Image (cartoon, rainbow, N blue to C red; front, side):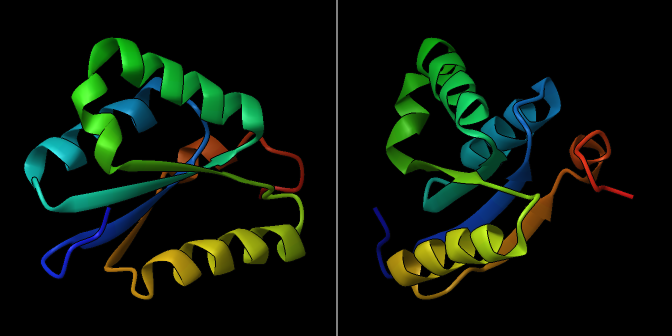
Length: 107
């Protein structure tokens, strides 16, 4: 989905209402933005995809959803490598840190 003018932003978190709102605002703010949501768990990915399909389906063409296992540094790195391989350059990273507070091992 990336063109030479596109910016790639990675949004990391869990499938909370806050993350959905951030995702929609980012996508609405820039028509050239490609948003990669790295969410903890496959259920979270499907929940975001389903919610946005109902609320703002037109945004899905510029949205990628990646499952990330934040309990494993190796699996988290593999997710980052997949995103980097597809896009080459990531312009910004937004972390919904509050979302990760309840995950095992989070400080």
